[in-house]
View 1 (cartoon, rainbow, N blue to C red):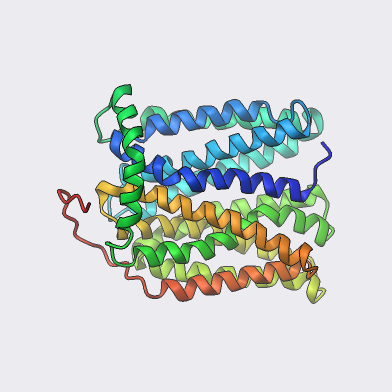
View 2 (cartoon, rainbow, N blue to C red):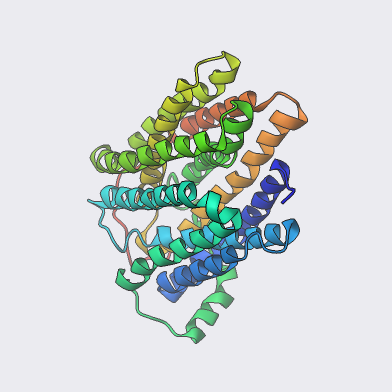
Length: 375
């Protein structure tokens, strides 16, 4: 449609900025209303509706629609993540979380496969519609079969929750100083989420434009990464339950350093393209491990009655990283002219910084007073 990488990057940044602003408020609203599913269903349906119209009307309308659709998707993750305590216990949280990650990547595999099979016949605009349909169909089981412990509230209660969410946001940000290790964890998360999100955004460009692979070859590399993510998610679930989220995330960060170093070294050292295939496999394992470890990590640091609002802050931190990372990439690769491989190496630095920060966090299970308000 005549766009370029920068336009896509800035549209992505705009949607993430909206999430950054509203994420803690949305999390607080879900806590006050006592339910996550109604919010998740609303954001999902809005995302599906907008995705159907992607590509219609040219570049500018599509960018606006993309910003809205991505905002709804990313906002929905706040409520989805906050459902983890509902469907798990402290003893099996790692396994349940990893199962969710693994099943999610099965959906990614289905999406990539449908793209390979249908793209040539229905085009990119048609694929947006197929993606919207698949997203809706595979969301329905969550809406139907997940039973929440909280009682259902009526619209009036939700409007009351909306009015109180701004005050709740201020309280939430203040509470980050109350719980030991929470602020440090969230600060460290900025840097590793920065690296992971930036890699996911620009890897297609890197593989095709920097390494010279075709779109079809990139799709195959993507499938390798997704399959590795599925396998790795189940593996990491066992690891998290066995050694805890902190040590698990440390292992994941070591793996990310290897992956990013390998990806950057391919053009810098003229390494064979097989290194990209190996790096993609390891990246898939690392992605699965990242999300399997860091959600249980957060749940170790906050009381159950405030899970939703702190997942809002958790999401806000991730979206902040999704804004900063692409900007750093553009500055390093384009503005300063150092190129994409050096931009990848900056992501290695981010991983190292996050590792150092997180070593000061204690992830031992806490005994919480469920009647305490902590206001």
